[in-house]
Length: 245
Length: 246
Image (cartoon, chains in turn orange, green):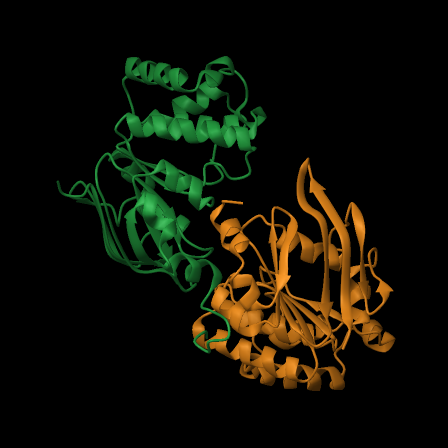
């Protein structure tokens, strides 16, 4: 086990406001690491900088030793990084199954030209839908899914490309307890199989229970990176949440 | 004295989504100021929207001075003296400062009264008087917040609700806004404020209300709220490694 993702000196400003300020951290392979912090701390911006959805003003990101700082998001998918978004981005007019296959970013030229789904992809998609428990909706339009089911769809779609690092942006937000329990259980199973997770989440009971390691951000900076116990017992963390820092 | 606002067993949520408020009850007394705090997703903004009539509750009731607001439109709620300044301020960016203030008094037909109230707003926010003919959209963030508060005053509210009035503002401007909120309180207006910066928000208020997962977890005099041991668990989760967490 070693460092899988390495962020160094990330900076990003939006119109004079420093959203992320000299942010550095490592994600160890095989762990579940959560990124927390009060509103406006820069968590989602940090996620976006790693995925290169937005470009950092300075700093670098390495994934398994490769510099990925300026790589396009779809290249990152091929390298083994999958990511979900805070607001689900399911394509309503397409079936759940089609949503899965769109997410797989195939390199198969024949499939792209013929614009059709490969049997192997369909098989994999169905098995992943079954894994998260929404296989009965495979042929329904995505718009019929509940909010929580959409999150499960997005989660399973990310798995289509066989990522080694899965980044989840607020997976629990708006998800009812039963579906949440299912999602948590699947995250644990996949982590047991060696997948690394990097999660932005506000549900603190969940974060503290699920994570091996927690990074706390405040005002765009990393305040502390430690175990859940260390983070809960560090007075600066609560102060940051209450606005005392 | 009976409470001026009584919220009883309110369930509320958006669209087909889950309940954000789940049987929430709260009493607000006249001429007291309240700060509502709580972790992300606790339901703070949702509560203000329900009171303002912007989000009808799925069940339960909101009673203001003996009248139910639960089935009223936002303009009808406003007419009872309950005014809401949302997080995004909802100004009319292409209208001038003066026009925005006049819009705030659109329920008031007496023009002399409108002028008189505008004078009062200018007394409180002198910068707005200097900018009377400027487009609202061209004001700084802090000035826009002052205009939003000034516009709310045009209706002469009995209850004024502010949703994160200092969000995204520079520290000196935050001080200024807080000072003006205090002034509103001194006018005898009942103020309910939602503030991300819990410590600062509570300094402003008489009473602190802690929301979590759509209910009032506990409440009490503002100054003691943050010393309560329950705060740590609410913001940082159940203690790790105890097996209690879900």
